[in-house]
Length: 403
Length: 151
Image 1 (cartoon, rainbow over the protein chains, first blue to last red):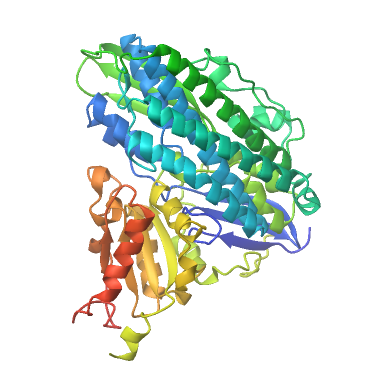
Image 2 (image 1 turned 90 degrees about the horizontal axis):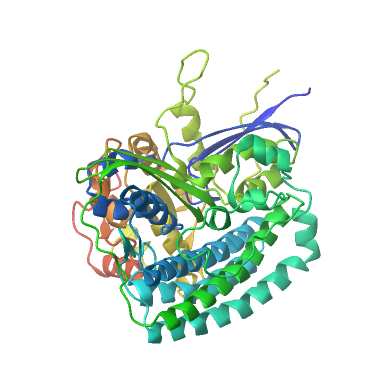
């Protein structure tokens, strides 16, 4: 082993929007080891939820993550409704699925844009985000807000989708589909993207099982899991769609899965809208008097994978325990497999490939070493960062001999 | 008009700092750069280092862990700097005020020049906030006119 260099990235750096810290141990250009540290975004949401009523918790869990701000209320609703054995109206089921899939469309477009940005294809970034705007407009028309939709409530949804909105939505989706064709063409046929993404950050099916990764990360390695099909909730068992899986497991496969899922999502929304039309007028909310004592488990397929919520009720007004597990929590651990052995320049896209969402994941405030019981994070070493945040991410500094 | 005020007239370079946000405001800030809003036509752009920035945009509540980092970033900033709190979280704390990891709203940590409330504020609201801030005469004691402003 030669001399190793440590490349610190973060917590504040131009690559990702959120604070997180990576330490890449490099031998030449090759990453030989990596550590990461999260916890900057920890806001104590589980504890805050215990001080809110069941209805209010929706608006807290929505703010776990701004990008997948429907998946958390979705999973929470499933959990609370499983305690009370609440049967929600068909119309509410359909609207829930529509919002969930619309969110997947916007989230995947966002990821494609960011991935293009990481690769240096700023055109893809601009395009994808431009095509995403009409979707956000639709959110504003349907729910009243571009992000954080506040659509869900116990027993149903808070706003209806009427004929007028449905026809607008269909028009927007047609447009998004055309634009997706463009994007798929641009990404799938570009020789540079092939060269840059194929064989990079490869995860095998065994890695996925070892680390427990979920969502598109798992499906890109040929692991056929999707909560929407395996344990149907809302309206997912009322429509026809298929789970996209790709065998390769590299970053290209992850991009492929996400792009192809866009078509599936659009198809699900269209089918839901048709069913909604047939359903005519109806309740969008079941009357729920109280939540009995008991425990409830709910999960939902977020754009990044399975979101899991555990809620315990003692028959009172608010949950006595609320446990949340977000998909990035599982997926982030795969970085060790996907980055080590690659070059530093590939580390950026390999970490971005799982679409990490740190605000979902933040669990702890401090990291303690298991053996010595010492705090492993040191503020002084982390703070060097800010000066170094130029585009030249790969610049190496602070050489250190670890051997 | 002194040289310090003059330097805020055009082409603001913005450094974005997520103290402990939910990503919502952050993606709306990124949205400002994309074709529909396109703030780069005003010469505004996101820069990678606080040392190049005229404006510090802060999103999210200040958590106990990020408090020291926010201070550090502020100290490294070339003064005068405009600090803008984007979203309800840095303005007041919002829904997270009762959380055990909440280290106070942003103005308890560093001096703030403008507040843009909303969860998340629309991109138009962010633009309006910046325009409002720049079109008002600088107040005395305002941190962006005093280079020795200490948090």
